[in-house]
Amino acid sequence: MTTALITHPDCLKHVTPDGHPERVARLEVILRALRTDDFAALNWVDAPLATQAQVLRAHPQAYFDRVAEASPSDGWTTLDADTHMSAGSFDAALRCAGANVQAVDLVLGGTATNAFCAVRPPGHHAEAQTAMGFCLFGSVVIGAKHALEHHGLERVAIVDFDVHHGNGTQDLVWNDDRIFFASTHQMPLYPGSGYAHETGGSGNILNVPLASGADGNDLRAAFSQQILPALDAFKPQMIFISAGFDAHFADPLAGLNFDVDDFTWATCQIKDAALRLCAGHLVSTLEGGYDLGALADCVSAHVKTLMEQDQ
Image 1: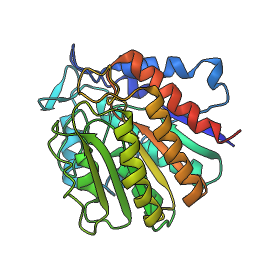
Image 2: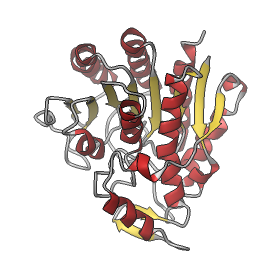
Image 3: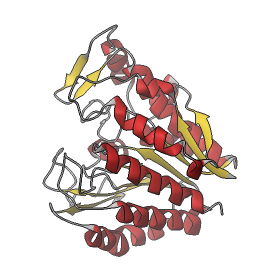
């Protein structure tokens, strides 16, 4: 088996206003990096459009309808100060959710060892009824709930190392004790959530905030002392990664000081946990990362690490 790389050209049709950090070029540099000889063993898969029923596992009907109706025929619709829709955005967001559903099917069906969803827009800021922070639908949670409700799993985990707290993921899983959510993120920083005392309706959430200037040693401490032991205790049957790379020292939107080796280390730790706890069942999805060079380097290292377990 191989690592699946799930993407779709529709994700390039989500066009944001000039100067917006979450731009088409983000995905272009990633796909260019992954089309090199080093990644020849990847299994490229087209992301399907998520069905309405799949999205409704995470979001209410009224919210789905509101986002669909906001889709413009040209130009942009502004959902909040940071979050915009172009004519291609709604289908792109459905591809993101569909990529996660497809990844779950491939991994649990034994067709892929693990998967990386190279998609945009990101999803971890999308709350149950609120689009924000560049995000429309909670794609990773939609995939997690597909694993639970379609495949019959009882426990899954989401690990988020984006520099911004995944407030949307937290909102969507707060009262679902089948889903463990762990996050490292800079605080104080947008969106202002993610305090350590935010632990979910049943203690199923672990937030490990990091101060501005924190580096790879702080990331290693957070994982070794808190996140990995919590994963071992929860015993998930599948692990999802919200893979944001904006904690890189070159990123313009925040102030953490991780480098490529730090993201490689974190990926190794999560991959090893998946091998130890759930037969390697692992799905990763792109979230943030806004310096194009750093993003391409970090995603390349991340995907290469996912592929290594095939060797």
